[in-house]
Amino acid sequence: MTESSRPPVLVTGGAGYIGSHTVAALRRAGRRVVVLDTLERGRRDAVVDAELVVGDVADRALVTELVERHGIREVVHFAAYKSVPESMDEPGMYFTNNVAGSIALVEAARDAGVTALVFSSSCSVVGNPPTVPVDEEAPIAPESVYAETKAMVERVLDWTGRTSDLQSVTLRYFNAAGAAMDGTLGEDWSSTTNLVPLVMRATITGSPTLQVYGTDYPTRDGTCIRDYIHVDDLARAHVLALDHLADGGATTVVNVGTGVGSTVREVLAATEAVAGRPVPHEEVGRRPGDPAATWASNDRARELLGFTPEHDLDDIIRSAWEWFSSHADQPA
Ligand code: WQD
Image (tube, rainbow, N blue to C red; front, side, top):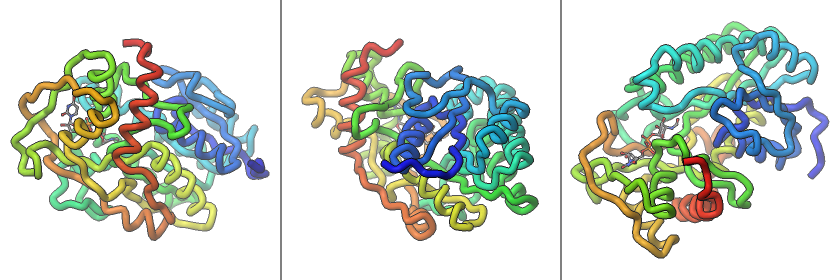
């Protein structure tokens, strides 16, 4: 791999799940990387072949010093809290960290000469989508504090693009899942509320039993439909977004999903096929706030970024199974 002569990319939250996979994708593309992470929820060992600076995006002096010292012009911004339930219990903590922190980062980066930023947002900014597939024109209707914080930062970035040279691509993730296809990185299941890692944990360790939230939805098998996108594909979309900005692309919002929906039961079946054993689960009532079905229109990602997903649900399940089976000793 030939190392790019371009300045390094600053990746905030690069010690996290999607952040660490994106650092790896940037390295594969020959880009040098500096990671800024508090390690409050990230893992030091997830940062591979990149400089790790332990610190907070809210620290304007630190961000300014990093940008000026390295001549940084591009940022990928992941650093945020991401638990929907926690955000409803601790709204102040989420607004402070996710919104105020992002504003501090954007202003310090802009003032120090950064001209390109890729932002980690979420399909959850549209809440329960009125129609599927969901495109980027869907009305913004957050149904959680977490989603609200993402929607607010999207607005800050839109206005930043109109009032300064700092242009951005906001990526609205659908359901990120799976682990690095080369086996080097994966998710930490210790604090997740997401389906795939919880399915793996129930199947590998036997507990806790997976609770299937609702089997009476108006879908093909009664369980919710989601657009599960492999974390390697999602990581690659960030590299393509930086390329778009480097080619003079203007500020925009892009959905990143496969365009294919899978039900909870289909996730269980795919897991049982890989594991060769059943997933210990029980069917319980609906989880409040869950849309019955959501999956992406990824036309803009294809047309604007040249993005096409390379992995399907089976790759997600197989890579997650490989990762969690060999890392089951994770802190509970
Ligand atoms: C998926 C499906 C549940 C757990 C998440 C994030 C959101 C955004 C998109 C990033 C749902 C069902 C889950 C369980 C279950 N990501 N489920 N039992 O809620 O679609 O959204 O990804 O920004 O912010 O929250 O993901 O994995 O929680 O749920 O039945 O124990 O699995 O009802 O239908 P969700 P999820």
